[in-house]
Length: 342
Image 1 (spheres, rainbow, N blue to C red):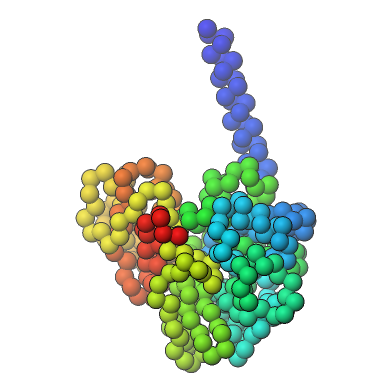
Image 2: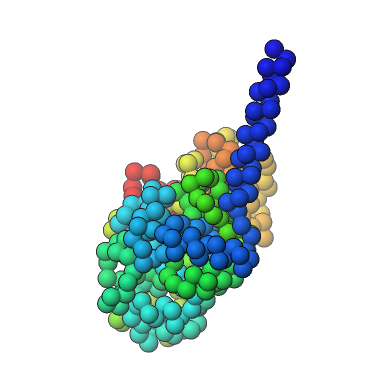
């Protein structure tokens, strides 16, 4: 009996070592060799996870429909939901989209950075129809994260990359978050450390003179209006037929149900606080000082941590509707939406 127990213990230890080794083999620190290997994997039509300043992405060659299909398959993502295409600089972006005076001014102001524009596709752009969901527009951005930039430069082409999580789940802001979502489904995760913005990019649609904020983010409506010296429209509600990523009503959702604008959480609830709240073992504070930038950075990571507690609800303190608070509330409302609404 004693030897049988030891044998089982050895087996368990060997499995742990194997799993740790496989995980380590998937994770690569940024280096010249890493970027060369990642570019090779992408050119072969496979997918790679990499960090941006906002969240970790799940990348594929945006010109290769077979590769892009692997993103949808891995994420279990509805195929009518378009993807963001990432490029190394504005000149590269202009090869795929038509830019007018407004988009050029905004590109100069906010690229590289957490800012996506939905622009008209050029004819014969070469981008996969799966990236655009068959639309004649595409969401495009130039990330400022150095690791993402190095990868895009080495790959020398457009990388389609939604957030590296199962569709509808909380977005990942560390390589370990990506690992917990996909495990051995992925062959490569470039570990660039925690994302320093922690909330997805602002998305703005420009159609001639019509300019609409589709998804709030770190770049605010006020900042955009200051650059183009005119008012912009703000999309009033999420869509069931999205023209850009992140517009579905139920999105960024933990498994645990969420209650918003809670000042006094009930017993048995996890609590996501903001400002001057006392926290305990079942609560975390997005920003004790009430800093919205800090709160945005912590949002997805803390939602994941509280979700793992497996309590009946996650109660969330009120977040002010000013500046970056619009983007945070947008994500929270989608996370709290009934799961049946897609």
